[in-house]
Image 1 (cartoon, each protein chain N blue to C red):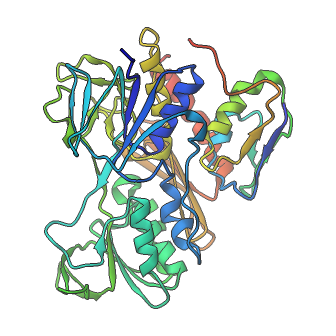
Image 2 (cartoon, each protein chain N blue to C red):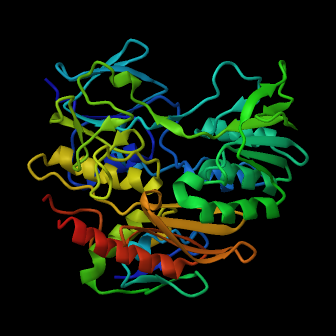
Length: 397
Length: 72
């Protein structure tokens, strides 16, 4: 009987990286990738940046997969997993056996409850990006709900195309919870300088319009007009299909520090690893609940570790990253390292929105735990090096 | 080992500087600067830098393949 080999569920960045790592590590068996979307893996970060901002539609930001000898099952959402007979069940009734399994089903954007008017959407996929691109133009009015990284980038890209943009944020400042008040104040200044109508400390109560979107009522009674709206209120790991599988699911698929998926008894499932936005993973600097992250480097680095741990179970690799993430808005390169959200103290070394310059460090119990810069790259590298020293001191490898 | 960075692609994400600071760094104007050649003992670090680049702008010569590596 043929060995069914390694099956990867999810066809995005983490899947591409896991497959590339497996081949690089010498795996020559069958490699099957199952994807809910009809597309081969593509890169998501450009979608809310240059893909949206360009005057003509650019090609899809495909990831390199041609040399990996992959069997593709695309446009095939998964519906379940049976570990006992090592089978992935597809929503269309098909089933796919596996010897080793890599779970990389990512996350789905949190959508607006109920049935909002047409032209209210979320933004995650290539098709979402194409749809919004087609609607953005000079004079068009875009409402962005949520001023996190994604919402901020969408607002910036739409302004660049000449759209009128209203950006609504429930917190006191954009990115407040993730990066603190000072970073949020800097971001707010960038948005307002670019002509974005930023409304903080309020929420959309309801969208207005029936056959088409006319705008939204904000909490407090204000109404804002809009032709299109994007709900950018975070994402939730795609774990529904794992219900009843025996894997530990709790706000994400719970993994150990080797990228191995854990069973509900907290022991690793045999031959099952996971990577990317779907996982909840431990870190020496996190509390016992671990962390869930949707960052590009998280997907790539955890995928590498997961592939190693799957192929060499007696020598599992360790995932103990210094997170790194970024955002590009209005020509300002925002670059962050570490865990700014864990800080008890924030030091603002420089904040000049007019010059696009930002330099903030984040500390916990007197130790550096993160840093954020805007166009201050040489400083970022130094902060990253200090964090590496701190982490080595916390958790000897 | 010869190193080339396509500066038209580079967006200063900094991942290469984290992976191989001996080869890649930023100047005070936030531009990436790098050594166009490096000793063989930095090959693993440079390969890691190339793999970590979000825009795949880093190219390393392949006189000895950076792709393959021994199993642990």
